[in-house]
Image 1 (tube, rainbow, N blue to C red):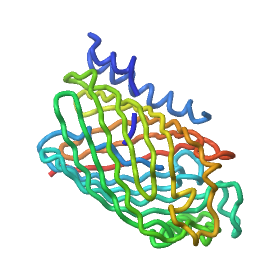
Image 2: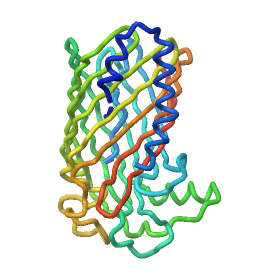
Image 3: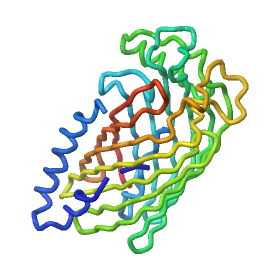
Image 4: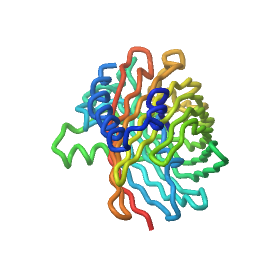
Length: 306
């Protein structure tokens, strides 16, 4: 769940045609996003933007390889099946995290721990006038049982890259349960897009946090674009600190090292092809722990309605 606004939001009402507005949005996506690179928790895809009367299935793959790095949030795989008519859906996610180097068998003290999560859950969307409430409940595992080490090793082997070292130090196995909700207000809405602020919160054994931000969407014919910006206050992040009762992880970051305020920025474009969709988004997040750095990745997705 994530997003921006004010000037972008007001642009939906200007008298210029949607094509010129979309061109401006695409320019921001392609130029501004790379420019901010120097500046999971990984949130899931925001299904609140899915409309219509057909069920939508969306498969996504995110990796920082697309921006030339292999660290922090290094890979994410997601599958969402959502029925906009009923406002209900199912979601499965796998996320992997690593430190800045994959060449050490010993823990890199002060760096991010290796960790992986595998979750499945349900999502619901309720709309009333300009308000949209999205809720999600996820259950799964963190640790070796999430197969993060197996997946990264096989991908590196298949692509001829250096095999990763250090997964033996990953966050230990544990069952996880997370609940999250987002309340969004469409302060600007029209036939070619919408924009507005939101607040959201997560409470669980992986992520406990709260955030405020905004999102702007614009579409013209088969092409649509989205910009998003948020500021998150972090209470707990098990992918860095281990689960709440973790006594088995070889290495974790102490809570005092975790940043409590993290900025996140997203820019994306999508193309409708009949009942199919192709979309890409670039995500940037600020420093998540003291001594770390900002990070970014690209997510590619394919969807179909039926």
